[in-house]
Image 1 (cartoon, one colour):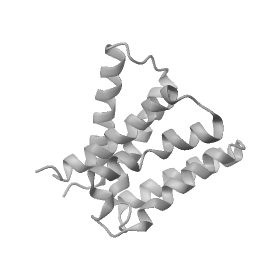
Image 2 (cartoon, helix red, strand yellow):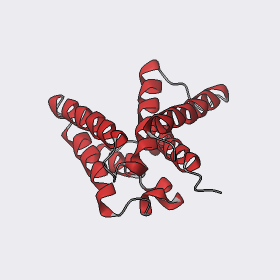
Image 3 (tube, rainbow, N blue to C red):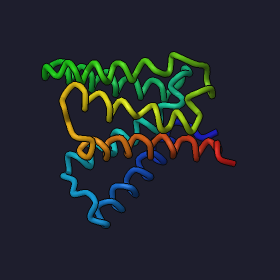
Image 4 (tube, rainbow, N blue to C red):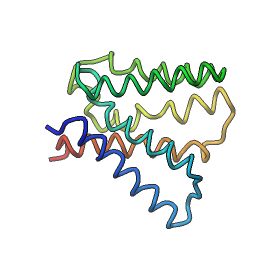
Length: 150
């Protein structure tokens, strides 16, 4: 099984391909900040399926998540911090290689990135969809590297 480094590289790589493809096709026009955010999301999503075990990947994931959550709270973005905190609790709901390593989880786990900002901030789905796709692509890279499709 690949380690956290392979999953980080895989998530970032697949997300970068998606970003480049979307921009080449003219579907998206991202700023450098948005590209960085999308790569960050893809990388975190690539680590997500394994964060239910005590590992280096889990430590990195929660350090990054806690840092981002603290930054959101300092900036008084409490609703965004709550969304992030909600998503961070999801892996505790099952065992390792259980629900976190399924295709349905790959589709559903990132869905709060779409649904909750639409509810809390009344943001249109088209502005949120690239962030959802980045999470799905990062998650997919994890499942692909773990050979969940073979």
